[in-house]
Length: 335
Image (cartoon, rainbow, N blue to C red; front, side):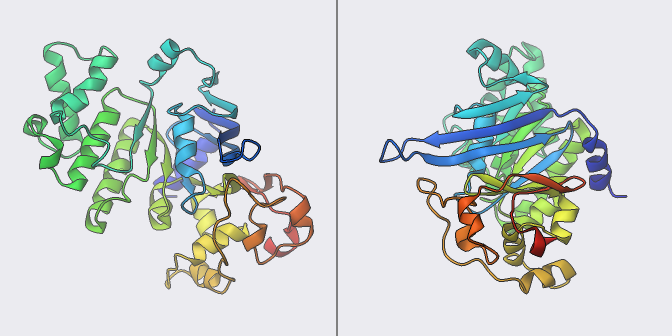
């Protein structure tokens, strides 16, 4: 049993570190009676030390889920629990204290770092906010963090523009680790990097995850990266969960038509599962607008298995096998 499989097995019986129930995030649209449903009734859990992947097309609501989960934007409904505590209604003071345990790695390593601050001040700002490693210990802690992510202590005196994209993302990771969090939202952490650098950053995240028992919500559209680093995967489409499954099981045999389509769009000739996926019908058309989603199953307008029933009934997320959840009415053709 490999490390990822072992971790997933242990996490299956662990008490959730993060629990999301029926999360909603709506934005005001051009018409008041037609809000933009960026996230609509999303539920999942993340166990201590688990990496949960969140995948889907651009516009599916992945980043909105991550930012709402951390209360970087307020939810429109549902519950967000951290270690059993509902955080959606916490006071600013209590939420500020809790942020030490919940951090984020942003997608763009260029826009997420203040160009006017030296690296030591970017990382040290988090320490100052939470009153950690004061005095002489501050510099030592910053040097330790830089070395932890593969940089040198003297890099702390430089400005962000003096670094490559991969190095900047390492600085962003060091900033997230500065306050010793237990949970990190990694929002497309390698999508803005060169392919040659992506593997280095992913391996760094994997090493840090194992060293500190970090739990992560890993948001990505790169299925190869998700397969490598994640224990379980949530498949999101137009703000709704289509499937939740252990990563190995999902990539071997996706059970939802949308999961199958995503897999078919990222073929691997050496994989039997990917070869079978290529035989399935590809997606037709574009992602519908979240301001005017289809009735019933939101995926029905692009689904090769859709029936008339799919237009009238919203499929509920149900456990169809141990650890495998799916929102689909067509049980006859998918199992």
